[in-house]
Structure formats: structure tokens, C-alpha cells
Image (cartoon, rainbow, N blue to C red; front, top):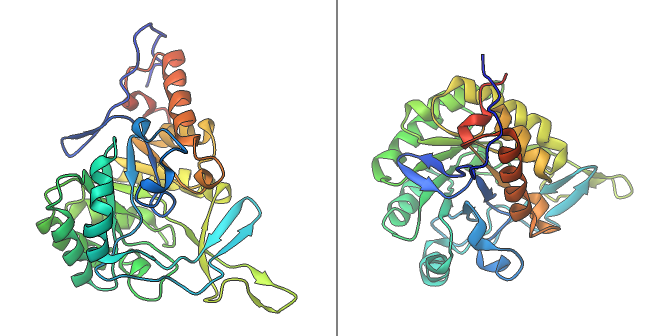
Length: 311
């Protein structure tokens, strides 16, 4: 039985440990919503972030999917960006100088269409000292090749993670897809293949139809649904996964306020990522961080691990 700690006067320890390395606090920004960090300079206190999870990076430049790429839904947003990114050459030339100046840890989201793509990006990024860790994107539902295809089969996921692990000396996080029958199976496959942590969840596959034109709003049909609509799914996934693996779980999906983040932490997350909500509230990660700190102080929590084990 877990006993609630008595409130105390000491400041709580906000640090998060992954594979022997330290994030200063549990609040990060989700991949695909924060660019490579520079886009939000002046809009939010980047120094206060636990981590910036970059836009997905592939070997070659990708222009992304045809517009329109976004469609609003009740309590959510469907995106079909299609992993648009500068590619390795553009990343090394234009983005590495930027991330070297960021005052917080930077975790690069790695994607691809083939296993060779993932290995090429990993091998390059692993040698960049300014990169804290790698988040393996095997769960993007808005591309035709790669992406989610690697994240729905535990055997395929395990094979890819194992191959990347051999090239990656930095903390390796695998981003899991909710578009599976049992997310604990892919989580265990990632852990067994050498992942240091898992993040869940990526977006759900969704569609919005233009009833006047009688066709999907998004040209390719479906896209990735994010926002508050998916939060209960994300919280449930974190709760299940945290009981199935022994590595840290990073929770994301629909976090739009302090209580949302607290739900994820109490469900078993060691850290969280704020995504879609930063489009309208760039300062939200800092507000959430202060809210977590205040909650921990009120509850007498000494560290993030004190959130866990209540149910």
C-alpha cells in the first residue's frame, strides 16, 4: 500500500533519469509541434523546458503531404504534415547550430521509410554532442511508407529497435502507436530490443469529411488525430504500459493543462510532452511545470517517482 507523503518545506526534486542521463524536469514539447526549438524563441521560456523533442528527421529532405494538412475536429486536430523536414544535410547545416544554443536538452525524433533510413539518421545524430537523446518515430499515421508500419508489429519493431540500439550510445526512446490491438506488446518488444524508455501515445488515425464536397478534408484521406479528444486514450495507454515494462514511460496526447499532466504522471509516466496545445498557448509548458511543482509541494512529494503506485 502506498502512503501519501506528509507535506514538507523542501523543494521537490523535478529531475528525470533515463539511461543514466538527467532531464532537469519532466515537461517537454512533443515532436512535430515545436519545430527544432528556434521557432518558439521569444514565445516561451525554453530554458525552463525539460526537453525539446524535435520535428521528425529523415535522411532526405521531405516537402510533406499536399495541403490542406490540418483539419480541426471537436476537441482535436487532424494533421497530415507527412514528416516534412530539412533532411540530414539541411539539419547539419541549418539546425545543429540552432540546437547547440538551446538552453535545454534536445532529443531528436528519427523517422524513415526503411530500416536503412533509420540507421543512417541515427548514426549521424549519435555523433552530435548537442543531442541529448533519440526518439524513434515508428508510429506516424500520416505517411504512406514507413512510420506506423514499423510500430504495429512487435517483431518488426523489435528488429528495428535492436538495429538502432547498436548504433546509438545516447538514451533511446521509442515512440509507440496507439493504432494497435495491445500497446503493451509493442512496449515490451521495444524494451527487450534495448530501448531506454518509451513514449506514448502518438496520434490516432482519424478522418474528417467535407459533406458539401463529399470528400475528405485531408487529401490523403486520414491523418493523425491529436488534442484533448485523445487524452483518455493516452492516459490509459501509459497506465497499461507502465505496468508492462520496467523502463521509464513518457506520456503525451491531449495535454492542455496542469491536471492533464498530473493524470499522466499518476498513471505511471515519468515525464510528459505537451504538443497541440502549444500552438495556441506557447507558454503552457512553463505553466504546467509550475503546476506540477506546486502539486508536489502540496502533496509532500519529494520526487517524480512519488506519483507512482496509487492504482
